[in-house]
Length: 304
Image 1 (cartoon, rainbow, N blue to C red):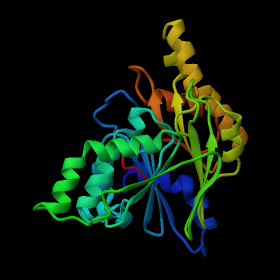
Image 2 (cartoon, rainbow, N blue to C red; image 1 turned 135 degrees about the horizontal axis):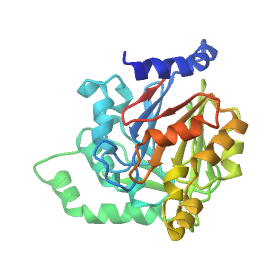
Image 3 (cartoon, rainbow, N blue to C red; image 1 turned 180 degrees about the vertical axis):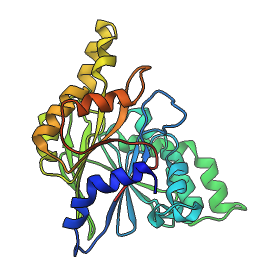
């Protein structure tokens, strides 16, 4: 176990103890922690919440399938539920390409590797059109796999898209998923999600400027996964970009104040914007103003 894993286990030990006797085990796997900047060691935003071996994905940026495979037992990882053929449901926070460009790979690779049922997709207005255009773009591939020399299950290529509004958008025996609107520039529909499982409450911000709604949803949560922009980095930009980033993202100082009031068991930083500074700068900025447990996520980190 690396030092990083020891820190994660220590930070969440109280949560694990509280869950003793619960009927489910929840794991959070950071499949992608990056931004639109194509940093080689950070794939596009994607988070897996795995409950009793079933994976629920939030966002699917570039690289999502490869990261899921790397975390799965199929390719030497530890998470059985992230086997490629078991990827079958995802929730999109908003339609920015860095959060959604992995959709064709997610749908078609899981299908050609054995998924037999339609892929279930939840997201804001526009998700239906996205699903329809993906199907149209790969129509010839679908035709060949359905009727040619590479047989695949007849229903697996389909995408069941569900355009959502605020409130509970999904529920099964393992999880209840609640969507809530967040502020992200001029996007009319950008969402965060709150997952309630038998042993955890997990809130993920998606891309969002400071928003009291996130604070309310995260109050008392076991884990808050939140994007962040470095205060030092944004202050060094010209006035136009300062205004842009402050209307689209949460600064480290704003996030520290939010977390100090919401008091999640663990704060996980992802989608970190530092504009040429070291990523750790933003972690230190948060820690300087927040006394709770906080970590800077890397791709393939597992929080359990």
